[in-house]
Structures are given as C-alpha cells and as structure tokens.
Length: 86
Image (cartoon, rainbow, N blue to C red; front, side, top):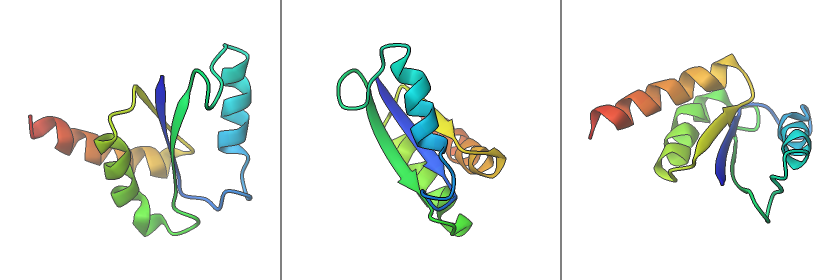
C-alpha cells in the first residue's frame, strides 16, 4: 500500500507521522515492508503545501493522510483540480 503524508509543521515539532506509523504497524502495515510512504513536509512554510500536495497526488498513493485542516485544505484543492483534468 502507498500512503501520501502531508504536513506543514517542522518534522521534529509534531509526532504526527511517527504516531500514525505506530498505529498502522499494529494493523500489519509497516513502512518499507507492507507500506510505502510518500512523505512531504513543508517544514513550517505553509506556502509550500499546495505544491507538496500536488506532488503527492501525482505519485498516485492509495490513501493520503494530512497532519491537520490546513494541509487537508491544500490537498482538497489539488485533488479536485486533478479529478477535473480527467
């Protein structure tokens, strides 16, 4: 399974992805084994979110997870644009 991860924060500031991977491992989804993560971090610069979201969508993951509502909004815009291009 391929999962896209979009976060606007600095990776060390929030344990979002690490925590998610811990929960997924309990469901037998382990990074590098049964799970491939497309990890995109804006590192505190939210102006990068739309570009990073577009990169994740272009990678065609099975699912996209976001750290929060700002990230989800950026991803929603990109996904809607991608779907309208079909």
